[in-house]
Each structure stands twice: as structure tokens, then as C-alpha cells.
Length: 262
Image (cartoon, rainbow, N blue to C red; front, side):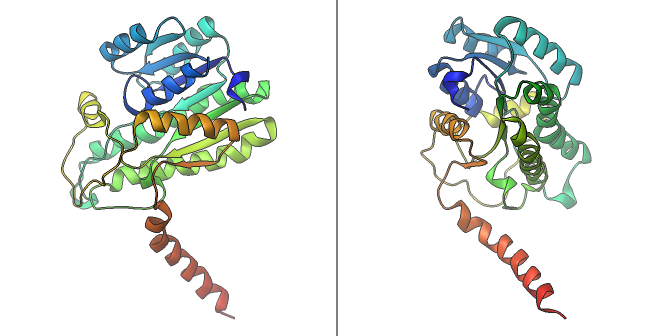
């Protein structure tokens, strides 16, 4: 959908980082924006800075009743949501599966996967009924290929977001609703700080973070362009395919082996 046709965007995790970059991209295109975030103090500062076309709602995306309340409040103020951006998430815990606290695993999946599904459960049916809208779900490059040790639980959640988005796109396309999965690489944000605020853990994991000059502003512009051209997938960094080749090559080899057998 062209964003000139949209009136209202709802962005989770929108008070900082990638979410704020997306919020600002929507504001630049004239949309009213509801920012949903668990961090009330930061949310208040952002809303005050953005002005009258932006409202804030404190929301823990794990809270399904909270989602229903947020939807009612947002749409009472700005009308039906045309663009839903499920972006709220926390960082990897840095632990290998064999050493992981199950509670940490559950927290990562609850926020990074189930929280996004809750947004879909809340808004998708109404978009389908209206025959209009676009949903963006934030996955990760880790949702395209398993990466370094210590990111495993995060990758499980993000692979789930990718699968959810691909399935949802097929379901919604006949009804005029677009779906995009955002798979960002490393962008400098306050994700670690936000992770600690919800009781998550941050540990150093094997490997080093790549250098990147991609900013939240850049990602916001990429998302806006993807909505308007109905892109299925957005990657934010170069050379992502190269990192996927070992995994996809192994799958291709397994399929070729089976096909070669009588």
C-alpha cells in the first residue's frame, strides 16, 4: 500500500532503536502513530518530542489483555490501524543451549516470538475485513541462518518470526493486506539496556559484532519503502546471502541426494 493512503501506524518497541527509526519514517510520511513500549519514561520523552500526531501506550507485548486495551485506545484516538509494526524484542542471552536457564529461553521466545504473534492476533482480522493494511514483523539475520554460539535461543525465536510472517503473507495477500518480515543485521541501539529492564540477561558470546554504518533512520526508510512496494523480506546489510549459503547448500545437498535415489 502507498503510505499516502494510510492514516495510522501502530509500532511496538517504538520508543527507541529500530522502532523509533520506523516511527519517525511514518511521521515523515504524514501518518499518525501510536507508539507502544514497555518503557514508560522513555516513551513519555519521545511522545513529547514528536508532537500531536504521536501517542504513547505502555504495553508489555506478552500481555494479551493489554493488547486489546491498547488497540481500543489507539483506534479511539486515530482510527483503524493501517500499518502494524511488531518490533519489540530483546537481545540474545549469550548462552549455549546446554548451559541455558530454561526461564531465559522462555523469556526470549515470549517477547521475540509470542509478543509478535499477539500483535497479529490483535489486528490482522480487522485488516483482512477492511481489505487494507500492512504488517511488518521484525525478525533478524539470525532468523535466516543460525549464527554464532550463544545466539541459539534468539535464533529459534527469530526463525519463528520469519515462518510466521511468510505464512501470514500467503494468508493475507488475497485480502489486500501486505506482510513484510524485517531481518536486520547489527545496528547500534539500546537493545542491551532494554533487555536488562525486562529481566533478561546479556552475556558475551563467541565471535565479534560486525562493523556497520546502518542507522535506525536508515532502517525506518527501508521499512517505509518495503511497505509501499509490498516487499516480502527486508535485509538491512550487504552479504547476507553469503552467510546463508552453508545452510541452504546443506539443504540443497540433502534434497539432491534424496532425488537421486530410485
